[in-house]
Length: 292
Length: 264
Image (cartoon, rainbow over all chains, first blue to last red; front, side, top):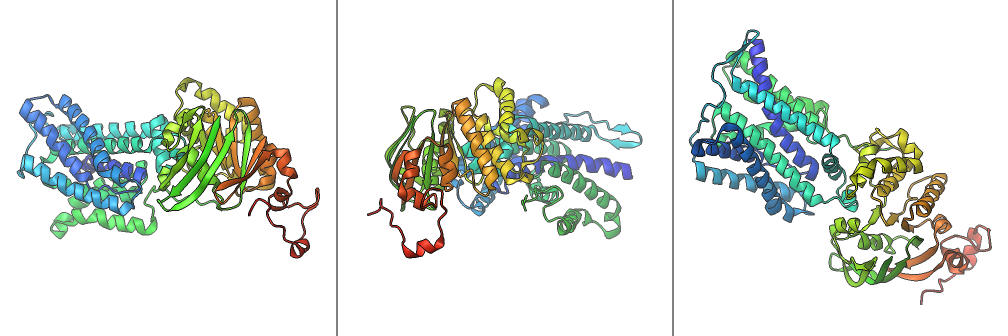
């Protein structure tokens, strides 16, 4: 029972981590919280589903295609919605993302309706037995893919010039500008990556739960994950995702029968409050470095 | 190399900061731009480097030419690509990045990526202290180390013209002297032209070939450094000297307050 819950928690947590990564990237680059992150997820899930079911494209190419589209969507949103707000107060940008989220949710419902749609079985159906823990293969794939992506992005930020430049812009925009770094380009890349990780998260969740517009609410649920880890810390987002995922499932498994359900949904927020009481920056949040 | 001709800068469409600023920086030289607070020194540098736009400022009149090309109101990225690099006031290093990552960020516009390793070593030769601190997070370095890093970061871009904005800000006098010595060395050995803005006139004039003095958004006096040093107004108002080598005492000020000759 415990191991079963733990593994499920890890799987869900890895997807949370992916989505939280999107929040963190955008927050790091532009100090703004993207409330449309959940809708990016939704669009990714729908597009992949649509490509797979309508055009009979095999799953993997479909994912690639979705990623390309997500990239384009991210750049487009940056250009159309965010760029006019450069130099404006952060709160205006946040309001713009809230508007964007309504718009995107409306458009997806217009195109794909509100019924839950199911992915055709892409992963083998028979569950795997790992030392007594039975898990379906979708979960294993999700976990693997999420961890792979997280690793790739961590390395990207640490070792590539583009990654370093993105962190530089997050630190001091003006100074970055003064050394010829194109802040606009960095923003575009940031939004593209955020849209792409959200799309992957959407596809994975869609495979597990089916796709309908409630998938977008996950965006709100992942926000505590990002805050827990520290809104501007990539390792924080990853760890926060796993912590919340595992706790949620353990609590759901053990306490929900006792209290008659519902505890699972509340626990992430309770933990969030407790941790923020002790560490206001989140677990790994960027401390304001003060030289004395 | 760099020619500012009658430049006028307006912030927010109302605040006139530069009022017909003209200045020439010859290739290979060190030029000092001196002036008190609010004279428009930083604005002049930002007008050159294109950072003005980010602050709602604009060059509304006059021209800025660099190597024969008009760069008035050009985007900051493009100006950097032309070979002008501004070291901003107050160091502005990337605090959460390591020393090495800061230097790499400075080399962002370089096309010859293969020489970057060599230039990292070059920067460490000028600033040996940075070598030991390579993997440290920059926010925890001392002010002097950060200033060295800021200049080293500029060096990584291999600029033709380096704009230094108050490199002495908040540093101990000994450290200021050391940093200016290195700046002069960079000028000699790398052939980098340097335009330095300073309030600390003494140290700036010690390394410069030519000096400009700015007040109220325009140049009021210019000349070879030796001539400037001999000018009585400069001595009085910028170097704090009356007779040669003698420090000024407050008692004299009470008796006779000298009027600036270039005004009125």
